[in-house]
Length: 273
Ligand code: KIV
Image (cartoon, rainbow, N blue to C red; front, side, top):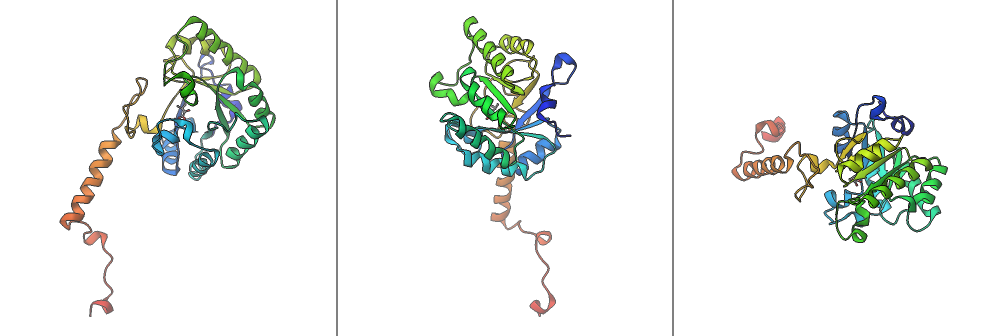
């Protein structure tokens, strides 16, 4: 059953809810398989840039790229809430532009949008919510800030930074976001923000106490090109499985094993006489 944004908003573990399961998806097969596996939320992440398009960071995808992949995910007709990432620069230039870009993602098939940043995004978040579009926030190691952070570094490691992050989360909750992703922080920070908020927290590298977890599809399936981050648990090794399968196919073609009689159309009599 597809969860609505208000249903997700009410989903707190301390109220007895099970942890939310979110995974990224970028295309029809990924969305279909993750939906069949029973996830609660599909995220068309701007990690599209890294894991599908081969870039080093998430700064290289546009609204058009994201819409293209939201449409592919929507084509699976998953009975699952679909969140679409607002890519870098799609909500930084003007409030009107931000609302328009959020609407493009919704019209492509998303049920809500996610954007990165704390109190500086307040005005944009309010305007998108005013346009009746649910917003998920994203705090901590926000990948679109990689240049400002000087690399992919664990955030909120000092008391001051941790308190600031918690205040940002509270500000965005008060604006009306329905959930917040917390990425790359010490687990105590994930725990405290989760305790402090009435909306669910969804962690990625934020420890075990958040109200949900999210992983990137390619990381959890062993399909990524680089060694995954410390917080990833890899549940399969599809890199090896796929390489072996394609090598087997190549070997069968070269040896004449493929195609065999089962993979060949029968010849009509009039063509063979
Ligand atoms: O783009 C993405 O995959 C994300 C997750 C890491 C939360 O934002």
